[in-house]
Image (cartoon, rainbow over all chains, first blue to last red; front, side):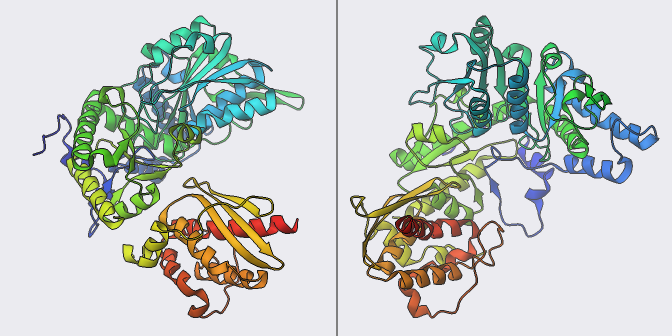
Length: 415
Length: 156
């Protein structure tokens, strides 16, 4: 009945690398919430453990051996991140932060301190996560910048009919590479080119994109890219920001403190060079090292293979959900799978997503229920919440089958 | 792991599918308050018609999950015709049942548990299983918090 997946990934082998799927006496875990946070392979946990057990010391400070080793490990993770997204200058253009949210806050704060002034226009889209909306709303409140939004249509695509007008005179375009709710892959390189023609800087929110799709910042044509580690097999507490080096040079520091200065006097300070200018205080060292191991793991699988696997899973899921539930399930976002990243937000009959998610949990199926930190988008869709299933390298047909079966249970329960 | 039947009792499903006292009253004269659960996006509006010191009538509109909707429906039945003192006691009993003082999430308010009989709870006892599902406690208490807000609006 069911067709098999087109995949180069050996999912059985991959699942063996993830302790959470191999707990003794563990109940079946159908984890379909990697869009919120991914699971971690043993190698990531080991990398952090090894650092703490063998070479823990602060970075950029001691001249003794283990401090040098710690610095070496930390800085080599930075380079791995840079190479992972084809940054032209990996060692200088990657900053570590707490998460993608902090990376975006860093940008909105630093930009309004120097480059943006009252009345300047920042363009966002209506499908942004709160992380790429609230920092700009704060800047609007505090500095009087103006916000414009690219609207979206009923199929979850950006409406680009009036894009010239929207971008006209803009100083910044800050936009997600892919929607965390709709899955829509936005035409970033085209938008970046148009924005650059207006003289605007272009910021990409890559939180939901970089973990899943081979990313090349040069092809995307953007100026900054915000990322997070915990959605790409890395630990929580580590985010990344890529920026073109000449722009990072231009921006003032975000937070002040140790490590981000080259000199401090009683009447002032001289900031450190990039990227350290933006890293105040002791950074998340173990987390950066864990992230480096996660990137090695992903590159070993191959980002192209990951994308093929996820597309195949989505085709299978669309197929199964539609054939089993027909009109009773409404999937938001583009119907063309090539235009989507691996998330499926849906409404199921009239059952509230909270109830759907609760009943799915009884079968070990984990999906996200709620507004997905995108309330303006929820209002546009005319819903208070949706349930969302999202896929990653360790998901397989079983997960989709379990989702479908559990939805059938929910249907029967609330019949 | 607690079973679904702990959470979704028949009474709950009945009140979810056939909510009592659903709708609106013109306000004023009715007093009203809006409540949100930012976690899941549930929204409801409570309308209260007072008669002196008692709730003469009550209606609720909005949308939410089965727990928040059924809890709201059960609440309207429980408080209609009651004096403010009686409503206050019911609220305390309800929150006591929700074990809000011992809830592990650490986010919710702390109230003193009080002694009460199951009879006082009436049909609301169907909601006692919610305690085993900590993230759902906020769904069950949304309507009560909103009612309290409405009653405070009245006195201000």
